[in-house]
Length: 327
Ligand code: SF4
Image (tube, rainbow, N blue to C red; front, side, top):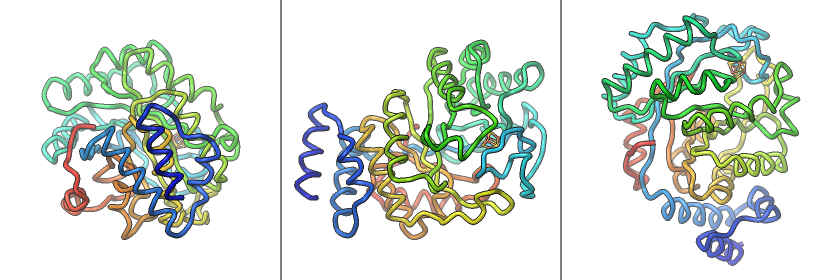
């Protein structure tokens, strides 16, 4: 594996690409071979992204009662999970939370709402007002994750100062019907295209440990590679009681790290951010995400579960030889 990785690195540094058989071998590697794979991913991350860890924070701006049936999600109205349910927070609340994130060192702050899409009218106007105020009064680069988008809403968000639109595809197209039946993969892809066309950066990734195959992890990475997006959030399933995936087998830490590494080989120039499920899946291996090629991570609380103490995460970043930076 060592010589194969050295050849792959030379090719990628020279502008070439990882091949599909190589991607398969990365995901199927075991033992000491994983060490060579991670070393190569780290070299690519250092070359293309440096030692800057982009830290982002999110606010759960509207929680629960979602019409969609994503089988992993605590916020779907199809399942009884006991997750918080509340309507859209006020502009003042959203701005106040962005200011707190700014003071805690995050440069990227995401406003995340449950539901298939943001409602036009009062809901959308509230988010637009909050985005304008965050841009005007903080050093934060705001992002939004409001579900499916049409062109007019995307243009309004970009005009209000939304720097990045976040929209996950969740999984490979071939596995998506096993995960969500209330909307089509094509709608998610269209949302990514609409957000890009409006001039926003796009943050688009997914969730692993849903029961997808190794082949589907590769398929998904190739889809993301084709979309030419700016950053790729990688989440690992933290099973939620009450959802159909409550008893899903958690990924092994090395399995999760191989996914991060594969995506660095596939998308060497992109920001790769490890988000939800970091602690529950990686445990003592959390800092290894940077050795596996990640260039950032989400800090603070997740949507419906608490995160680690920020001071612990910041220490981990510096112990891994990284500095904090803008996403
Ligand atoms: S992942 Fe998003 S769209 Fe799917 S159920 Fe949860 S909140 Fe709704």
